[in-house]
Image (tube, rainbow, N blue to C red; front, side, top):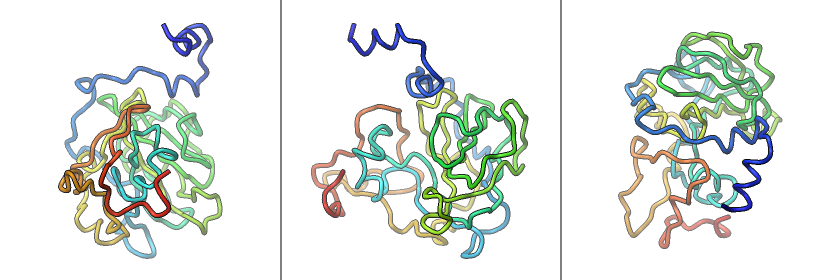
Length: 238
């Protein structure tokens, strides 16, 4: 048995440690995608409301930081980024129970996690202020659970909502697109989604559409350590 394994068994785990070392649920225990959720904002997208920014998966931005920022997520961007002015009401994508308010699962300055049926959890990150919902509170689809913020805390640098869909153990990261009922083709045109995905020139058609992006496992090996990447990472990949 490794020293790391012994330490994990002999030292009581904090909430943060449990968040990173819990066993992933088997895929058979996770509800399949049936467009059972909604979008996290009310009203149509637009330059004054909200737009789809970075997509889920093997985006060019994630590829450039696949060993650093996204190294624990198998090198991919594990959520959807929705550009929105700070203070835009954020809504629950489905019925559920609040599991965390500013919990251990990242996306500062503030975040909320909601547990849903089928061993699914949604995370709403980069919220402007601490949410008023309480752990254990039941919420319904479309209910306001927070306000969008900025990952840099300025409301100028990068105002957006980071939305993830995970299994209840928080070890599997799922592509939200087939789970959320939306006109994704139109949403892709409205925002900056055209930045697209990183190509592996040895398999140039792999993971090049929004709905084909792979699920990720926390701490798993990189999925995108390409020998012939395109476009090349400016300054080298980190």
